Image (cartoon, rainbow, N blue to C red; front, side, top):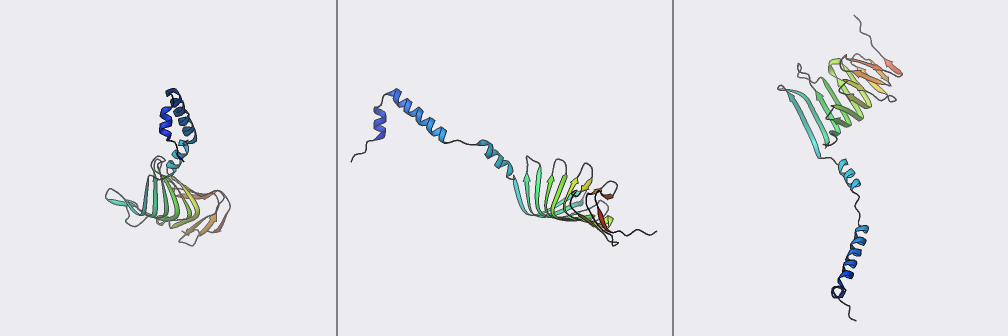
Length: 196
């Protein structure tokens, strides 16, 4: 059985019929293949622009270390101006002292580079050596403009001092300017007063 050659048959058709066949073929193919550009751009915006693993970062100002940070992974999102960090450990130094002023760790953190705000999650622990104070929580938020650290309204935040004070409460906030902290919700624990 002989199979006719389609290209020969196509060339034998009148020109207007060939153009019509070509036009119909293009319509069928173009309607069958559609691209959803919105979902492609959404997916691409969710991908980090840069992924770094086993990060060891040191920030130096005026010849002195101000921050030492280590992390398992850092994802950088340029458009969002966001860093997402896995298993972070950090030390913050003051200008006057060579030992860390604050030491902290968290399973997960986000840093907004435009505002210097941050959020910490998955087991947060921050120790402020100058205040002899440690803070433990499931999550904490740092507002750089207000210089305030906030705990979630309905989750417990645990404060410990070297003098034996242990307080646990809800609605925690700490003011970095006045070096004070408060609980807006219920609090329990033991507080050691200073004897003068």
